[in-house]
Each structure stands twice: as structure tokens, then as C-alpha cells.
Image (cartoon, rainbow, N blue to C red; front, side, top):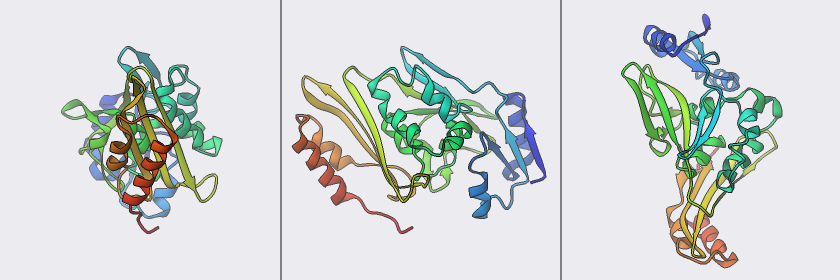
Length: 258
């Protein structure tokens, strides 16, 4: 790398991205740099733009849901009262707790994990299950995009040239909603072989608006298990219904070679 620049404003970030083009990358905590460099994915990059001074380290909750700044570390998000305020955000809490070691949680940022475009990380499937949106800043202004449309390929997102991610937004869920996240890994600090994020709402004792999202080795992007969602939608929340949904996930999921 030739330059490591700690930008002071969003305007400066956009100016640097315009000036350096494909030779520049925006970084948050920098925890992925070694992995990318080791795999030869930064060979053409000469400039790193650090956005930690932009004031994007916050967690805010209001009637519309959660707003989490891109520079918020996993530790700060996990310890925030707003994230822990509702069972509906349980999947996010589970995913943040699953990220180890603690040194990574203390440095890695929410925006960095999403912008990486890696389905083996824990936040991409979790954010998709929670119907999250991302706010992007670019030379033509700001725009908001559904996370489902943000992940477009392995290590590829919908970020356009000159754009960077500024905020994650999680809509406030209906009453009687809960969510959870779990993953299978080869060891306690590895990326997921398989991860699953689930969200369900109970209406009049029946499952409603079920979302089951798979990450890890299931493809280039996190994937919704639509057939399994259909199995439990409008069903009683019984162990038998959950078992049938799990069987459908197993039947309909194909894994990629590692």
C-alpha cells in the first residue's frame, strides 16, 4: 500500500474514491485486510481510506427500528441497550456473540462485514433475515437499498463506483416476533460452514412471516429457504412443524465445495 488516509468527512471520502478509483478501498476496523491480501485480492489497491473519524459509530433506536452506523464495532453493537431491547433482534445478538475472538469483535465494524460481500460471515444472513436496509453515500447523493439486493455475488455487492456504506437499518418488527442465529464451523474462530438466521412472528397462535436465511457454504450470497418458510407459515409453532421445516431445508439446500 502506498497511502493510508484517515478521512475527516464524507465529502473527503468521496473525493478520494473519485481520485483513486479502483485502486482505493474504504476500511473500517481493518480486520479483513490480512485475509484479502493473503488471497491476492488487494494486489491492485494502493490507497486505503479509513472512515473511523466520520462519526458513524452509533446505535440509535426509534419507532421505525434500529439505525447502526457503519463504523460501529461488533462489541459496541452487542453492548447497546437498543440491540438488546427486543427478542426480535435476537438473531443479531446471537450473530455478534458468535464472532470470535474478542479482539476481532473489538475492532471489526458492521459496515465492513456487510461491504465485504462474504456469505461465510455472520452478519450477511442475519441482516437479510431481519429485512435490513443499507444506506449508501456516493457522488450522486445518498440511496437506500434492501440488503437482499445488496449482496449480488461472492465478494461482490451493489456498491457503485465511488460509493461507500454509511448505515445499517433494521425495521421495527411486529409484536410477538422473535429471531435467532446459529452456525456450524470447523473451530471456534473459523468462518461458517453453515449458518442459519430465522425470524418468526406469532399471530393468533400461528406462525406468520417466517424467514429462514442460510449463509456459509450455500453459494455466493446468503439464501432464503423459501420452501421451508412455506412449511411453517400459518402452522402451529410445534416441534413437529419445526422438524418438517428443517427437513425441507436439508432436502432443498445444495452446498458448494470448499
